[in-house]
Amino acid sequence: MNYTAFILGLLGSFHCIGMCGPIAFVLPLDRSSKSKMIFQTFLYHLGRLLTYSMIGLLFGFIGKGLYLAGFQQRLSILMGVIMILTVIIPVKVFNRFNITKPLYKAIGKIKQQLGIYLNKKSNKSIFLIGFFNGFLPCGLVYMALIGSIASSNAFSGSFYMFLFGLGTVPMMTLTVFAGNILKVSLRNKIQKAIPVFVVIIGLLFILRGLGLGIPYISPSDAKLHISNNASACK
Image (cartoon, rainbow, N blue to C red; front, side):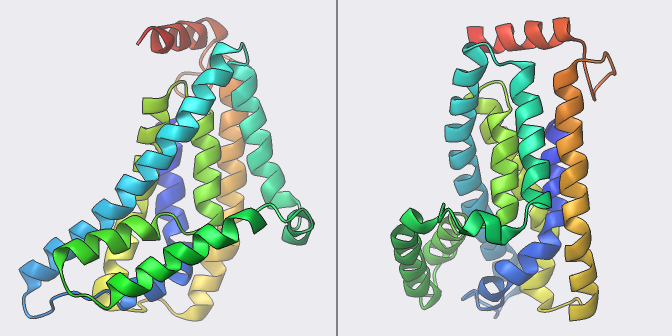
């Protein structure tokens, strides 16, 4: 199911233009040389990918615990259902519970660090901008984290998030070099289509958990048990 992470990142990167685009626009790159710009853009992405991988490692570890507790395929079904529900249920319903309120203080500190490094022109600052950028709250990142929980171990969770981040690289790179390359109207249309792809990915996770014997999409229960046991032995 790792391919779903890359697809989510690739398609979701159009949403990233609106969320992280402003940061990409003002990156303190050394524009005196194309080679320096390319290298520093690589450092920016490396910072983001490192953060995503670290978070994925944590959530993958949580997922491993749930697997060992006996959830196995049911966990994949549950994560798929959660993905679909987050699309169907209006955002205002989630806002009533103030789920992210305890994180506001931490997010404020992250933004403060971003502001500091955005005013510095060095390779280290570019890398750290990407690193802190990866911690900013984003609905698509939450979707990817749900997928990482459904992985069988910490490494798989980390790799899932790495692939998600990798999927965002092409569009974010174009944003860094070309600025606002998409018209607002087209970007809005693409963003409206993203929930559809999230639902499709959620359905894929549900199919995976059902163990219908469909290669790559819904492997049989026996194969899932074998892979989970093998992961648990590592």
